[in-house]
Image 1 (tube, rainbow, N blue to C red):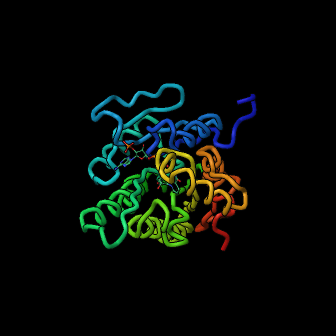
Image 2: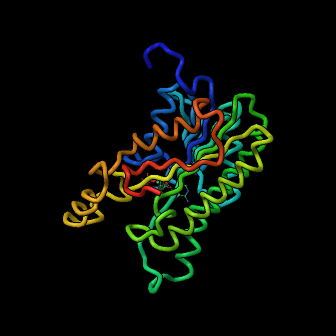
Length: 253
Ligand code: NDP
């Protein structure tokens, strides 16, 4: 920071799925802290039972978003460490390309459990604290272009359905929570360079895909984080129930 207060000055944020240093979650955490937030990072990768000590603006808490009890415990720890919750970013997610003819029920269920039920679990656990927040509380959920165009790349029908569910869930949250002072919005990233996508297409397909994107390249985690910062901060104070595309023009609709 350069001495100016920052777009999230004084805000207390939860970011799920922020442990992978090459992921979108890590970019969100870095930008949020640079903009003045304190952040509880919830991820299944962190050890269970570790103390929630705040250091350099963040604390790392174990949380499997697909398990209700794990989410409730992590949110309790986060509230104690941060003193409340003003911003929730549901970023944790998984992807798989399995096509419908090969898709077993347990894989379909797991996708929904992590991406959609996980978003519900953390939101439901954090909601009392968000409703208590005096600092323009906001929820930001990670959808995907896959939900809008019907998968087809690295995400199969189960991934597309889970992210479509997240988008619909967010719109309903916006309606239900708007009168109670909480905004809820989505970002829908296109192809972003993280472990989910890097090296997954093969060189020829990758070049072909890039040529089909108006901005001629894949996006970076930092570019998704910037859109999330807008939706998490008071810059978007009159926006709720929207889906912000971050896809280089890959899907214009
Ligand atoms: P990453 O795999 O890099 O990050 C996902 C993070 O979520 C990882 O830290 C992962 O932990 C964590 N996670 C997975 N399952 C759980 C769980 N059950 N409980 C808690 N944490 C969990 O992916 P990205 O950064 O690329 O993706 C972030 C989000 O953005 C996802 O929701 C994804 O669907 C969405 N997105 C990504 C796009 C892309 O092109 N990259 C495009 C559109 C949407 P672990 O590593 O231990 O599994």
